[in-house]
Length: 287
Image (cartoon, rainbow, N blue to C red):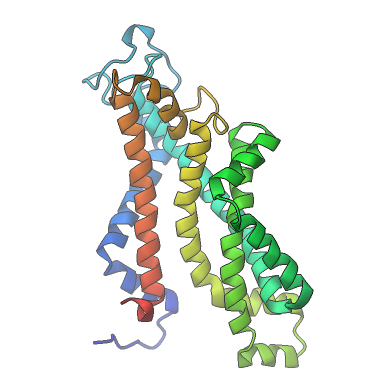
């Protein structure tokens, strides 16, 4: 039975009420909150500096002193994972926001103006989608040079296309609505119509895309770090930790297990929230 909408309730309030009923979505939200708190309070949680070396304790298994064991330099893996959460979250969120800013702007322009502008932007989207995301990001980083900042730029330049495609499609629909015709009739500028009338009506889809884009950016950044093109030593980046751990996978399995679990849980958290948010925003499309 459909819940009766109360007077004064906003769309976002109703979305939150529906989202709370999604168990996986709430689990995902809990996971994200957990990692955000870990990142914020990293100096108070980590027992050691993430780059502090204890060469006498190289490759120690998990114990009372080192909860997750140590790496080949005797660095505490638990401390490195705690501080690495900052890198993962910053990379994921910043890359997603940059991709969204580029893609949403181009999608609005493409859908609203149409014609040659639309053709040029959509052909650019087709070119980006013609290559696997990681391969294209690798090519861009190879040009810019290795480093976390360059990796973030590369991932953002690859990730904008999905925003542009979705926003364009929704803009084509919204611009035919009567309130857009009314805005034109009273002399509103194209810029104001785009960002004051159309953008708020496509924001829900953008938020869902962002929640999916963040884990994708985290995985891609970790992959680039694993290949030596992202974060550089001695950064406590999770992908870089996995790269170093592959040499010791049989001798010190804990070295690769814990960074892998960290990536998996954070990515799952955002994916669960994305699924829950999508179902809450578009309940009529849930089977």
